[in-house]
Image 1: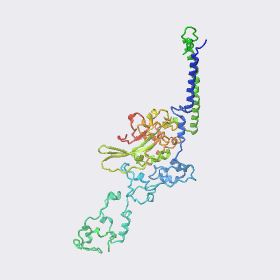
Image 2 (image 1 turned 90 degrees about the horizontal axis):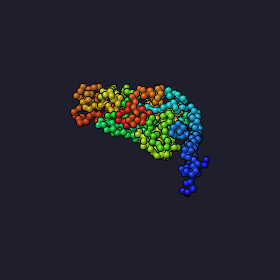
Image 3 (image 1 turned 135 degrees about the horizontal axis):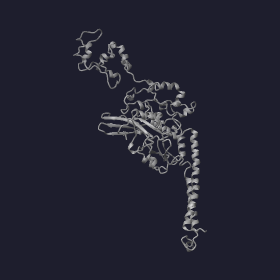
Image 4 (image 1 turned 135 degrees about the vertical axis):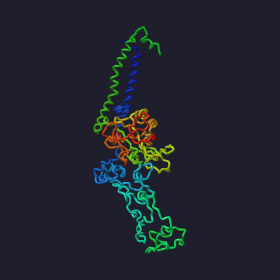
Length: 244
Length: 274
């Protein structure tokens, strides 16, 4: 039996094409392609081998357990250390030689969470950084590891310290602040939104200082109608430290 | 063609060395004999590579087949501080400019006349400017966004070279060495979660911090969230934080009508969120 001569030729051409295909596949298709699916299996391992930067709070707490205990008992219990201290995997890997930079506790950082924003959930503690003691670093009053919730001040002097000191030296020392200032309860909670009132009438000061009224021991008196009737008393006199 | 070449054709009656039946028999037999050889040539290197990969995974003590990762996001807890965005950029070497984000935060403002504004200045990384006018605002809230790691990912379907894929543990990843930078997947993603890396010239996206979760750590954004608005876990196991979050909240996904089956579940999701 003799094959016609075009059959071996065709067979050679086919064999070459198939060999070329096999060789091209072996060369071009990556070794692990299709190991788990229609992708390069080694890519998963190379992505899994990327470096870790954030060590995780468990790593921090293994050494800094005292700070962790303080933090977990307070309002920052849900925070991870690295939120404020930054990624610290290098410090965890070599705690002696790699010293972390101090935490960012400046006035630009804390308001990222605690600055007022109408879109934040109701009840989340927020301040207006422009009016909330703008020149003080946050950490001067607040401990970031164990922050205290805002509390209602018990006395006016808690905030108005310098006025309280002046009044202590004045003839008005015995008068409570609320004698002259009508102070809504809400002023203690949101002092900037609900303000305390000043006397709006001359007749208020005149209760003690009008010569037509019976004289109170030590209180100077004036003729109310003749003494600069167009002005309120506190526009000229400073009641917290009145002239003797 | 010359005349003598034409002479021994099988159809010529002079001397038929091979008839049609014989030719077909020989050809089929040859094909049958060659098939196992060819398959062996193609499969052998692959099988050995598969064995090597399986060994590497076993060496780390991590079995991807037993996991199905997802994330939960509690909108009512998000304060829009942007710490997740900053942490993600630090962990994953994302360029620090205004256009490239694996995760970002959107602020929704819905006014009483029904107008909805969505903004995300620098992805929310530097916080949000105060609302110009709070009058007439009906609701306003923050929505963190990231790759949804869909069960039916459109981005994986369109990749012409198999450079983006779903791992066996349900994470959608990009093979940077294999990506040709055609940007098809960026167009295909209905959530805008993919971006084009300006220097590597490949598609990039959230990996769910794959390098962290295989080591038992949580993703960087979850680690950094100060209020616990992000919950990481597995969608199919009962005893993970995410499963608990999904049981105790009325969770929804983004754009459910697209049938992408996202694995990022939102609680307290407003109907206006797209």
